Image 1 (cartoon, rainbow, N blue to C red):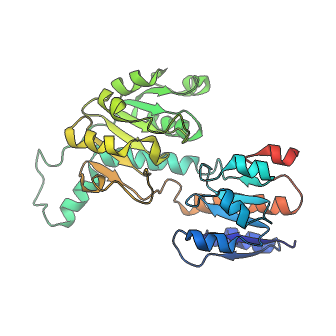
Image 2 (tube, rainbow, N blue to C red; image 1 turned 90 degrees about the vertical axis):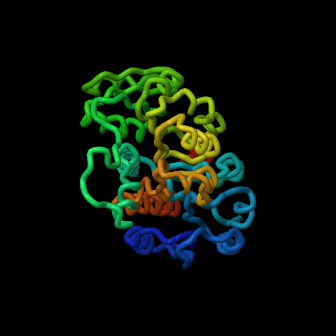
Image 3 (cartoon, rainbow, N blue to C red; image 1 turned 30 degrees about the horizontal axis):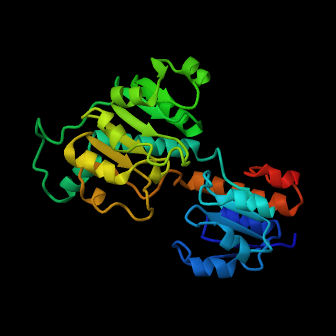
Length: 327
């Protein structure tokens, strides 16, 4: 198979080994950091395809530079970093890596929830600083999780996987989405209700965001919504940063509108609102939703398999813009 691909950042080696075994030539950006824009534009020239990641903006300028490439395999389930409409206009295939990161991301959201509820990050720092002198009845009191009310905004694959785990804690689930998920309602062993978001915000002890980033979801959680939440409530965001208005969240945490928050994603990633970093009642992670060895390797396999299929003349398995293939 004669094709030349540029990989914009190192991915797990087994995936690259699969690409090599298929006879596809490739180069990988050598630095373990976000590729500079000028380097990206230079490296995609003359390539038959590109394996990119979510930190790169793939737009008309990139397509101009990569005028020979007819496939961009995005190493992520989301593809809001890619101008799909422009790609479709130019006849360029865009693929993603759905499905395989569902459980890892749902688990990570629960990690944030439990860490926020039991103040794990604060307590870890307290102990490491040598301040622990013994057990005390008022030492670092957190919140119960069992038998509380969980609010889930978005009942897609990850939202449902996240909500299913609540059964282990005998939690009541309130959820909102474009339409009810009757399969989940039938399977969940405890109380579950489809509600409007305002009711979810008012009645939930924990609120977790699991919607895609769209124009309609940008700042879906802002000052109005945060003020609806209960003072003991905890907000979790492992979806996309701009869904939550970080400035409003800072105000909510400082003024006690809500109790705490757990974040894996940020509005201007990798930058984080400078005041968030100073707040003890906010658990911050560096976008680790899919960061397990197994999941990131499976993501690599999907991205590579899309490339291999394309260069064989076959439809890529997870093609985002199928109209290109029809054309």
